[in-house]
Image (cartoon, rainbow over all chains, first blue to last red; front, side):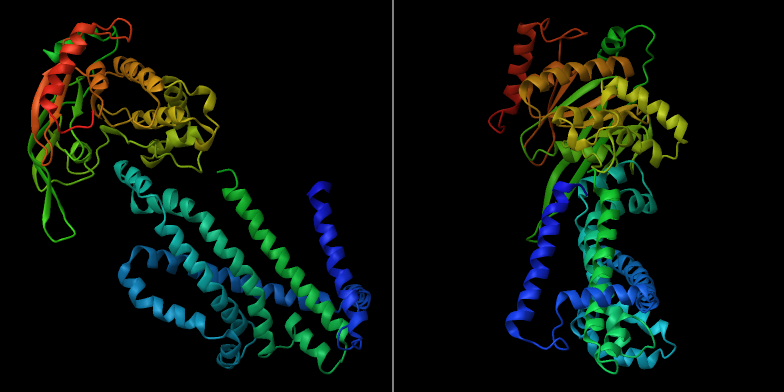
Length: 249
Length: 272
């Protein structure tokens, strides 16, 4: 990013922090309800330098990455099936939509009960929340592959496998990656929710700990900032992959 | 005979390797939304000699494109058969190259990678592929555009790339479905000249669908006129213009006489 691009981004950050500061002054909220940005900044730096944040961030990141990989991987396979088989779509889609419509917050405690070992349940919750947007994006992407290109493939006697790898996947890639952009931010939400349902570590667990027994509101905000940064970083990682793979079209 | 004409006008040293196409009694019908069936082609016969250039002309809905897709093995007829050099064609055949109305390039691949696509599908090793692609790009004058993406090309260059791709596997028959209809009139004339040049170098049998009578006359040894739906062969007209043909040496009298003849057969049913 060059200076010309960085300037508006930096300005927006200044405006955001300024507005935050203004609210803390005008509202008169106690620091334990809404801490001013400088308290949060100090706590954020402390938490990272003292090694409080890093292990929790690492735990959450692990859940997010594995959960996303499992969820997105399954979603691409199922999305392809839905796009190519009317029967599969008719039979499966009510369940997919129902699963999506059920709040993950309600499901998380149940899933935590079913998988008491810690990591598995969290991966399941992450994967579940990632699944729907990626599956739908894959289905739409595969369906919208130009029929003319598929006919070209057929005229060249391409096998099903060749059509899949050389036509369908590359053509649907922008759509699939669009779904993954949404999915990766949801994976962070999934990881936090899964930690609320029961955990001994992770950023979600740290939020609860900071708010509850520690009563350290600046630490809670610092954790929220870390979670947000994690989400933003992962989002832009997907965008970067997208640019590498489909940017030059 | 057409065969003799094309062989005689081909430059010395270029071997005739055109395929022979025999279409027998083809019937194709499609399901209509109301449950009935629409007959697109009704008992059509057509023979194309090795190295011959045949233009298919007919009103909209006369099944020209349908016929091309049957010959390409992309569409199975209800009845009848297609043979290439005596072999029945029931599915896409390596001996047949196809140029669609639109270029149908893969937008995520460079021009070179697009031209290499059929070779890749056919499992050619990469060095041989690269060699052949260079040759093909030279053939259609796209040497400088190898690394460009389709969106960076003009419409004409895209169609050149599509033609190079169709020639990749050295087909003995080249099928073209209104290949230049999206191009402006001047570019289109130039492309017709280039297509003939390509034909004289490769010796491929060509079956080209067109809407344009002048184009048909300029390109073809023989013009086949199809009837309105259901498509049947109305007339076959030999084009008595010697080769090599160029735009400025065309015998105007022969052209207009042939064109008049074609127009007579087409009657009122066309938009030309």
